[in-house]
Image 1: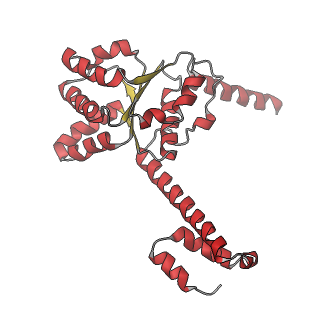
Image 2: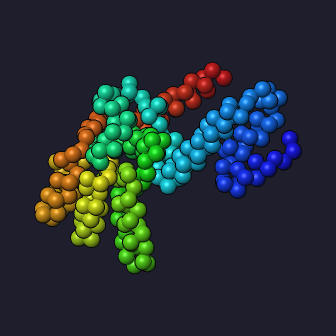
Image 3: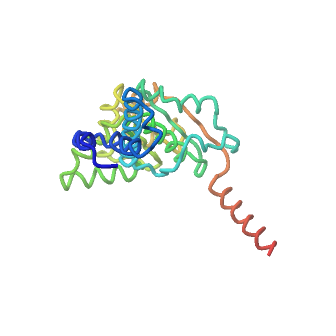
Amino acid sequence: MLQHPTLDQLRHLKLHGMARAFTELGDNAQAGELDHAQWLPLLLDREEAERDDRRLTYRLRNARLRHPDASIEDIDYRAPRRLDKALFQQLTRGKWIARKQNLIVTGPCGVGKSWLACALGQKACRDDYSVLYKRVPRMFAELETGRADGRYPRLFRALTKANLLILDDWGPDRLNADQRRDFMEIVEDRYQNASILITSQLPVAKWHDVIGEPTFADAILDRIVHNAHRIDLDGPSMRKAIAENINANDVDRTERK
């Protein structure tokens, strides 16, 4: 197909999806049977699909999920960890994010808290919400460094503007004075404005001790817990179970040789 003036216009307007669809239709002999009114929806659909793909790629890259491949479609509800299937499937619809509510996921090490959080984060990206994942110890370390090198305002702004902030691995270390103030400011800025998802090995009843200072603890927990959904997991380590399954398969393959 020769270069068409319409292609130049589409590319100038940055309608690259439409430009690609226009070229492909022009090279398709059967497309000659379509009139202009039939071409236009095809071009628009392609442009919309490509923009959606670019937007999702951008969302996922900025989210920096610990498990970027985690997906709600791959969740194993048969695993012995007391995951409430009905509640979790309700959460996957994302209404709690639209309502600026929070989610708390607690349970022992290895039960899959971080993976489930990332699966919800990935789904939120697919639903066109902005997401940011942070491990709590690293977040506090970055904020401390940011005070010294001037990055603090930018780091803090990122923690408060995302539609969903995932704070992974909360506790058990007691917060110092700077960390308490930072956490209070983050929670205060996000309260009724955006959602927080927190994972922790500690039950919520022990969070007061982690925060330390009673006045801060009461204020922080009041803003997090009172409008939060709760998932309390329990069971053996899934990492250990997966490793044992891999080892068993290796032994089985060896015995067959």
